[in-house]
Image (cartoon, rainbow over all chains, first blue to last red; front, top):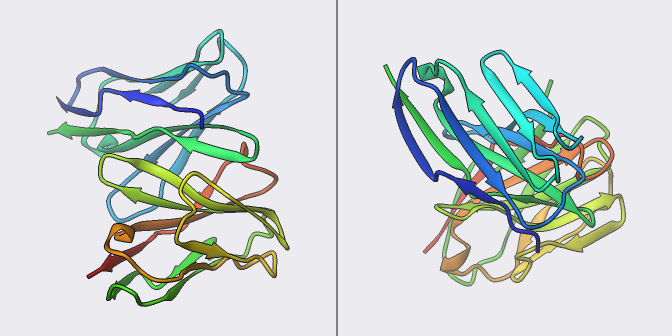
Amino acid sequence: TQLLEQSPQFLSIQEGENLTVYCNSSSVFSSLQWYRQEPGEGPVLLVTVVTGGEVKKLKRLTFQFGDARKDSSLHITAAQPGDTGLYLCAGGSNYKLTFGKGTLLTVNP
Amino acid sequence: NAGVTQTPKFQVLKTGQSMTLQCAQDMNHEYMSWYRQDPGMGLRLIHYSVGAGITDQGEVPNGYNVSRSTTEDFPLRLLSAAPSQTSVYFCASSYGQYNQPQHFGDGTRLSIL
């Protein structure tokens, strides 16, 4: 089973601050997905990164895939309370998608 | 826009009881999967299906059965419920295979007493 390590596990910041969360593995993935999950709901896809070194932007969120396709990061600029949620990365092989344990982000007004 | 529908949303069982968690999708997706989510453990894959008539085991399959007789439905059966199966269960589907965007249901919250 391929493991995905996410850090930090918990993050509590003030509105307007910047933050970065990380997703690391010893395995190479053909692609990595990032999801956000809000309480009482299922995860919702934010982005998929495919190419080593790829950078994708989604408004204030910037996603990067490592050159070796073993790691990824999510950077949020000027965080807002609406960014609060559980951020999950996922990668897979052999027809199975593996999720990291997630980063629980709280943005305080 | 139904997407992925899971029923029931909540269930309480006694140890030893059996039940079926229902999952249906209306997007004609080939790939479907079941996950359980426990505090501090993230999402763990129970079973998955790459198409009607084909199922396979994930990371934590013991105590669960699945079948995929149609493209739309992918029920998860608990054979003899145990307290360790208390969890939130999510069903997901995707067009194509596992590396495509997964569409999740809203989950079934299951408590085993």
